[in-house]
Amino acid sequence: MQKLILIKYGELTTKKENINLFISTLKNNILKKLEDQDVLVSYDKGRMFISKKDEDYTNIIKLLKEVFGIHEIILAYRLESLDFNELKNNVLDLVKEENFKTFKVETKRSNKNIALTSLEISALVGSYILQNKDVSVDIHNPDLIIYLEIRNKDSYIYFTKIPGLGGYPVGTLGKGILMLSGGIDSPVAGYMAIKRGVKIEAVYFESPPHTSIEAKNKVIELGKILAKYNNDLKLHVINFTEIQESIYKNIPHNYLITIMRRMMYRICEIIAHSNNAKIIVNGESIGQVASQTLTSMKAINEVIKLPVIRPVACFDKLEIIDIAKKIGTYETSILPYEDCCTIFVPDHPVINPVIKECQEYEKLIPYQDLIYKAIKNHEIIRINSQETNNFKDLL
Ligand code: ATP
Ligand code: MG
Image 1 (cartoon, rainbow, N blue to C red):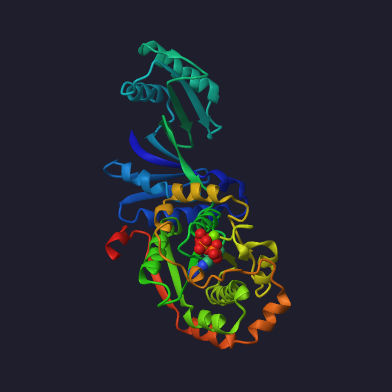
Image 2 (cartoon, protein in one colour):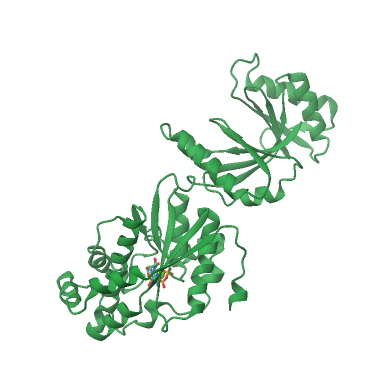
């Protein structure tokens, strides 16, 4: 018998027309994730199979837990036969190693040409175990479930299923531009978009010398965490200093944030167009701050045409924090480095900005030239998913 990993696709199987694209993208994403691991990957419409010469899958399972589009990760034994005598003897050999008092057998038979039904196969294997081992059957709460899968040429035996991340393979839904600040919300928003198959490129606005290199490194570190799920990450760094200073000098301070965010949106839309991205993703959450009231969102959103997806719009902060902790961004997000927004925060930001006023104020600054300049000079950082966590060394 060969020991190997069996992948169940989950939600993918509902995508009838695109199924080939979904499965081949998943395969490529898995190959990328496991590129140093010397594995063989093959698949059919129902399952993907990953095998490795030394049959040590501990590290592989850990890495597969970071790949979207996987419903379950299963460590299985493959028997290259459909012979039931062989099957029951092999099952018995395997369960000798297991410590249990009660069990049940669950069989799945994708090969409908064989004589026995799934229930009959379970009964056959189950009674053979009962004859040869001092254990009993418990359908409802067994210590051990013996899963059998009878496919076209092979039979598979396994005992545990490890949940995968679910979602769609990254890239199957196209590309999005994530507005990535150093805060808690935007990395979570990015993760949620990646989960739905959107390949992310990130944009970070920095305002040196008002913002520090540590603040930027923090964003790079968050980018590295997202890169694990996104295959890699292209991070666009926009120098926002001149735009922010110009807004600060010329525009009434209660409108600073509104106008600043309108500029960010405009820049993101241009970056999206030039990188073939179809949406913008950000970490806005309804009501969280003055710029996230519905009126503010409307006033900010009206400067661009691309859809803005806000995955955490309806989440409470505590719910967002929960996800941030689960995906490993929280500890980095709470490091205390100022963001470009926090530096120029006015005492009384407008919570019901008027679009006409925004337009009038914007006439006071040469914003098109400033935006052009910022984009022309922008820096691109390519983050590889394999990079290790060396943020602490940078501080
Ligand atoms: P976060 O929302 O990520 O916790 P934050 O609370 O500092 O960070 P907000 O002021 O709430 O950010 O801004 C809302 C959203 O705007 C952010 O979630 C992020 O998507 C985007 N954003 C804010 N500042 C920046 C920045 N400096 N660079 C890129 N995107 C930003
Ligand atoms: Mg926020």
